[in-house]
Amino acid sequence: MQLLFLLMIVRAYKYIKQYLQFCRSNERILELQPEGMSARYYGLILLRNPIKMLLNFIVVSFCFILPSSFIKNTLYRFIGIKVGKNVIIAMGVLMDPNHPELITIGDESILGVGTWLMTHELTMKRIRMGRIDIGKQVLIGARSTIRSGVIIGDRAAVGLQSLVLKDVHPKELVGGVPAKLIKKLEELV
Ligand SMILES: CC(C)(COP(=O)(O)OP(=O)(O)OC[C@H]1O[C@@H](n2cnc3c(N)ncnc32)[C@H](O)[C@@H]1OP(=O)(O)O)[C@@H](O)C(=O)NCCC(=O)NCCS
Image 1: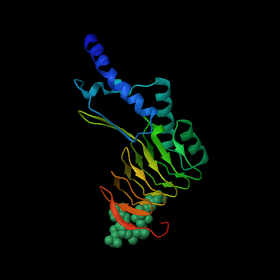
Image 2 (image 1 turned 45 degrees about the vertical axis):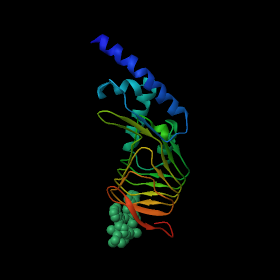
Image 3 (image 1 turned 90 degrees about the vertical axis):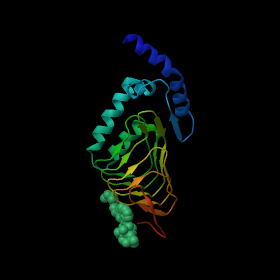
Image 4 (image 1 turned 45 degrees about the horizontal axis):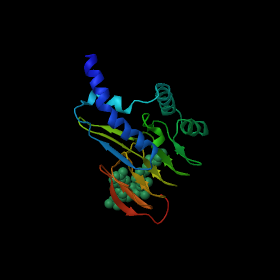
């Protein structure tokens, strides 16, 4: 058993290097297909400073129940999320606690209740990580989910309960599962 664990650490090594390189770069998406490793060992690749991980989980969980406030935005900044000025982040918003530093939210944007921002994804054979970049004056409708690697342009809007898998251009209203273009916006919604 211990031998298997050691073997997994050796196998994980090359992927850990790619993962760390991605974190230091400006690349948007990293996809890894670890050979000879089952999904239960993927955690070895994404392992980081345990104190930092614990802090992220505490802040994200606490902010989940806090209403929008200056304190909440400050706490998010503390764990590495780039939160612009006058951003409104409602209760029930879930920032990915594994890699919060990959999230950017532009000035005066609104994130509705129950929005999820996922910067990492695991499948049986793959790890995907990506930066989420939300522009300025963007509205994310309540209970929407934004996938890793997605950029949402300035003054765009996402309708309620949408699943955003692809980039949204500035001044576009998108909605649905998966989110599709509804219309171009002349003004803020
Ligand atoms: C985006 C939003 C503001 C648009 O509202 P609106 O300007 O009144 O637009 P409408 O409701 O008239 O919808 C316009 C079109 O978009 C479609 N649409 C709106 N929201 C949609 C959604 N979430 N998914 C799919 N289509 C949607 C409508 O069906 C309509 O299509 P049609 O013209 O073919 O009938 C609204 O849908 C929304 O998401 N509000 C939530 C705001 C929110 O969550 N704020 C943060 C928490 S308080």
